[in-house]
Every structure is written in C-alpha cells, then in structure tokens.
Image 1 (tube, rainbow, N blue to C red):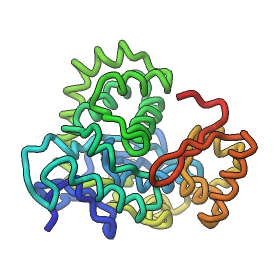
Image 2: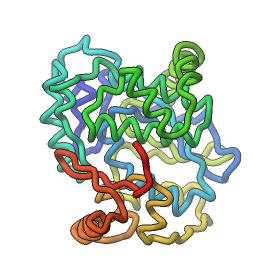
Image 3: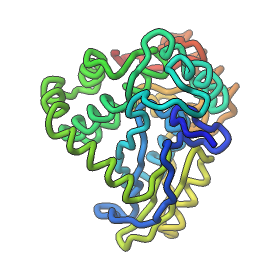
Image 4: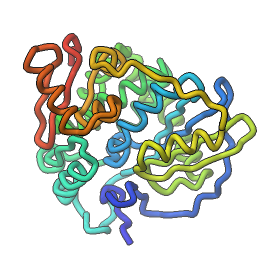
Amino acid sequence: MNTNPLLCDPETGVCEMPEQVESKRINPVKAEDKPVKIIYFTDPICSSCWGIEPQLRKLKLEYGHSVAFEYHMGGLLPDWSYNSGGISKPSDVAHHWDEVSAHYKMPIDGDVWLEDPLDSSYPPSIAFKAAQLQDKAKAISFLRVLREMVFLEKKNITKWEHLAHAARVVSLNAEELKEAYEHQAQDLFKADLALARQLGVRGFPSIFVTDATGKQEFVYGVKPYTTFENAIKAIYPSIEKRTFDASWENLFQHYPTLTIREFSELSELPLAEGEAILKNLASEHKIKLVPSKNGPLFQRAAYQR
C-alpha cells in the first residue's frame, strides 16, 4: 500500500495521506446561498487535483449559477520526515510527476523536485487561507497561479517571493497577505485540517456535494466529468444545466489561462483538434503559447504574469 502522499495513483486519481481513516460520511457544512455546495479538499501541490481542473472549470460554467464552490486545504505534505511508498526524498518525485502528467494529459514538469524542491506544502496552503480573507474568488485565482508556477514553471512556491508575485498577479494586496499569513491564516489552515479529519478525508481531491438538508454525495479522486455532474444531479435532480459560449474568445475571457486538455474539455473537442486550434491562434498572436516540458499553457493575449 502506498503511504507517500506525493506518490499519487493515476488509476484511482488520488493523492492519499499516510494515515488513512475511513470516511465518516458526516457533513457539518451545508449549502446556504445556492441549492448545492461543493466542498473541495485539495492541496497546491496535489498532481491529481491539477488533473481535475478541466472538470471543475466546466462545472463552474454549466452549474455555477446553482452550485457554490468552497475550497479547503488538506495538508498533503507536512515535511519529509517519513520514508515510504517508494519516495523518500524530493528528487524521487520528479519522474513520478512526469508520468502523472502523461496520464492526466495535463502539463506537469517534475524537474522542480530536482532544481528547487519544496520541503512542505503547508506554506502555499496557509497563503491560500490568507488570500481567502481578502477575496474568496481571487483566492481561487491565486491558487491557480500557484499551481501553474509549481507544475509548469518549476517554482518553489514555499518561497515568499513567489507567493507575493502570485498575489499581485490576481490583484491581491501582498502586504496584507503576508500579515494574514503570519497570523490569522495559520489558525484557518489548522481549522481546515481539523474539518478534513472530521469528515474522514484521507486523500485528494476529495469533493463533498451537499444541499441545505445535509444530503451528501462524495467524489474521491480524478473522475470523468459525468461523475461530478451526476453527483450534483443526485443532490438536486431539477438543477438546470446552462449552456455557455464555447468560442475561444469567451473561454479565455472566463479563464485567462488554459491547457490543451482544458480547452478541449470546455469546447467538447478531441485533444488533437483542440491543440491545433490553440496553436493556430497562438501563431496568429491572438493568444500566447507558454512552453513547458510536458505540454504548453495558453494565455489570454493581454494577460500579464
């Protein structure tokens, strides 16, 4: 049995914690403002969580009018004080991340673990909680930038210089972020870990779908889009699925950066066709192509990083 959280299982789509407990299937958090709430336990360096970005982005476009998304940190990598699961040091993660990248068809460059390895996922997790104090929507954008930094740009996102830069990219106040990071966000992160234990979370991504009565569905790991969609429908059978404009202009208006798989998922196109469209748009300077070892990222033309 794998007990190393960074050795994610591509088949189950799970990055599992060393100490596993059975889910208690309790839910102290219920939907309030919208009929359905998704409670998402994740981690900034969880490769399987990066693998469900296409599904989550599509869910938000089709069901965001009726579904609230609530992000919680799970604490994937406290430190390197264990030796298990075939990974005992940061450099062991590099090849695994390259393999996971191919499996999920999402660009991940494992060389960060060779060039500037992270010693914990706690600092970026606490920074995310600090970002939530300023603006919950911007905090999700902040988390996205952090993931692009670590997965594609090989940046050690435990370093404050990168956390501050990510904050500025999404128009958060970096000074306020640092103040919160050093104080309130520490307790908020601990509260997330406590909630994860209460709910029996043992790995990531863990998604609880709930309504105002506490009715609950649970989706564990990387699953096809229909699995997430069916969980929502099980909670709220009469939910309206909204169509959205899948033109490249509109998609990049909603999301300033897209991978090939994300664009293809949102456009409902085969990967090869989606890739050809994006590369053609980039050649015409309508969007920007940012190269990475295991696949490019495409950016809105005016997007500044």
